[in-house]
Image 1 (cartoon, rainbow, N blue to C red):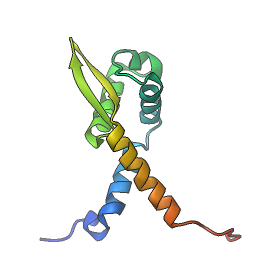
Image 2: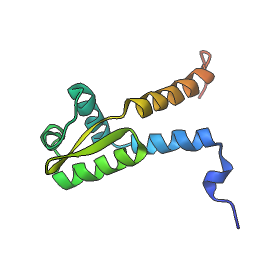
Image 3: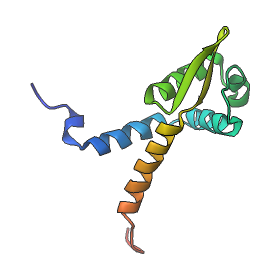
Length: 110
């Protein structure tokens, strides 16, 4: 059986790329900001805050939840979402390690 493209890279590289992909849409950034500012579980008000259709917001929430950055729970007839602090801090640590490892000197090229 052949290698997949992800097999060519380290686990850390694949993990960073996955989170970059998940966070690579401005709507997802807006959703994350809304959840952080609320500092509580949020449900239907996300649609109003972000300004996108319910179906679009739901799709972005699905991606964020699959990544582990947010968690969701059923409350009554709707889902409520909040930041998963453990995963948030894990991703923050990965990104900080990556940037700290490559402290660029003052470069004057290109």
